[in-house]
Length: 285
Length: 293
Image (cartoon, rainbow over all chains, first blue to last red; front, side, top):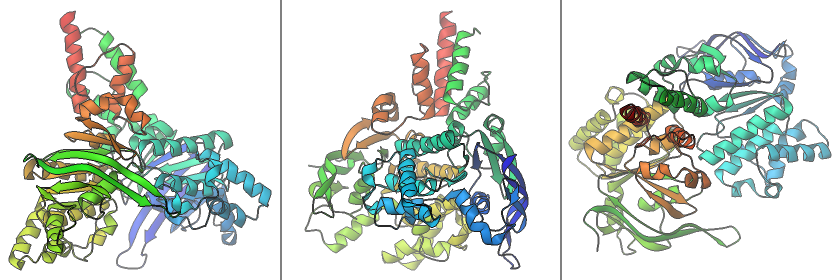
């Protein structure tokens, strides 16, 4: 069964006014349990709006959002429970840190869940391990940390709630390559260890190609593609047409094709490209 | 003596920040760097390596502890500089920051672009000309009467660039100016930067975390913990893949591919840091093989 299902979901900003904008148009998607699904689209395509629907921060204008087959708005008073189960890491989450110590900041979510102190410490240890922070940062003031470390603290704060679905909005934006790798590896580990479902927004097609099982492409509020990453990246011309980039490796394949060399235009990872070029070099004219 | 060729000259520059406990953390350590007029320089380095601090020193937002900076032959670190001197120098070196929403001040696009030249006391007829020209260069003329709030991130960054262009700078510093943009916005800004450099002769200093962006510059400087670790052309820098990875950086995907092919005994020679260059290099390698056969 799908972990998350959106059924005929539409969302409007400023409904009933002259500025009414339909940010999502009749979206129907199913997200497999335990999968890592990438969500890509240009600025204003509806990505963040969709993420906010998944944990009940916004209510759909039309349609239904299901978690494990249950409409999340069936009992509106219990929406808080949905928010523990679907953890949302917003863009630039380091701006939301507010406690005196890293430990207190990460503990904020689990405390609200009413967990025991031992359970909370256990979860904090586990969470910082996922994001690659060492225990000696726990007593530090989060504002004394580097930008990349603050980001990891913020993500740990969500992971400490052990969400069944972890939703991340551009978790690596603005980080250097090493900072990016630590966070993306942490997300991957979290899925491997807990079997959680991951939904991640990124503008980096290279990151998406490396991390995701499935990819959803949004354009102007509509789902224009939803499939495995192989299926989605093989549609590179369409991706470029709607204002998205394709991985540099795919561009290389296009450049070769344009120069009359027969290569597979759907290649998006370095390892596949190595095989393809090796094959080319072995062949004769 | 300042070399007539160099537009920005940095000599033995050091700066540190004071910590809460009274200690000092060194951010830049005895850096010397020459930047030529019309150069397109990318600055790489992991978070905290001192890139943004360097940019802020060049625009006099920060003052160094030690060392000198010359811009266009004039020492900007001279403690006897008057306020007018600072004003003159800030016109020459403009800065574009990361967040497009933090840089626009007016509610109409053309008013925003006029803000800089207005503060310079330029006659209004000339401001009009400069604003129109600046918007034309960044391709935003049709939005002149629009509201910045209704523009996309990439469009907002182009307005921020136009606002600096209207002050007629010699040099522009981009501090991760594409980090918050989508691929289309990034492409727009990268194309605009290239145009400013090639067609308008503006010296560019571009701080970035994207290796494919750095690959488009003429020269790359790699900062690591406050020191210059590497300085060279993109081809020279990206050849040292292991050294880059050691300091938390990476190479463009195409360069990584060529390195992996080499490990398999397949040599692709020549510049490979952009997809087009890499395709040419692969074809050259294919032709060479066929020539030998």
